[in-house]
Image (cartoon, rainbow, N blue to C red):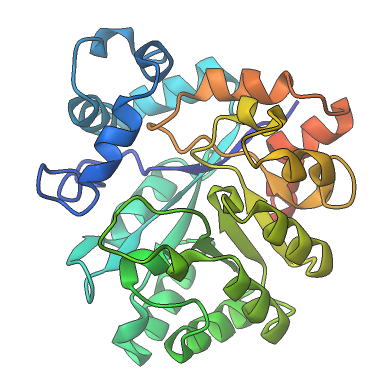
Length: 305
């Protein structure tokens, strides 16, 4: 079976350090993930037991690339998708495209990179996106609307969407709850993806993090927009089968009418590789559908089959 992880944090020092500081705007995520079963979180790295969530994340990211590739090998993962980020206009946070481009250059057969560009930078962002794709080998654009405090339908995004169509690359959008209470959840509501997908039917789009708590809406818009894919990054797959979690529509329709549009992602290091793969394999899905979720759909999306 070919296994592709649809979303990981780039294994690079500085990827999340500033935002995860005690006063950083992602500090709420530390409490969210700290409450998880520590054995699950540390399963890939027992040596980190006894550390805080922030310490463990930073230690995992601040390792030689060879260590990260070892994690992939142990889990049987062929390739991963990771993304740069540019939200300087709203948060001051920036992981440059060069960082992700260097990871891709070092290991092009294992790492697929997405570019981070800030829509408020206008034509400079459009030119940077083109440079990242043509010169750095990145394969799409990554946007977190809630961090930018912008809706995906904002007109400043549209030149970037058009450039992605022109370049033949995809767009990834945060499409789920966000846990920074000072920023509106509505920025990441899936209904805005429906409008963008209608305006750009040739644009391949990834709705990251599965769309919860708007899972039914996301399933419906994927059913009618075949250019939209759902990535389950940062979601424990075992919850998809629980009736009272809100995830059952994804499991039901992801088994049938949108089975070609679901991509598994761990969100590593927030969730461990092996445990999440095992949980997908345990879901009540046909073997052929599991193969699609775990790898074939991502390979098709990124033209790497």
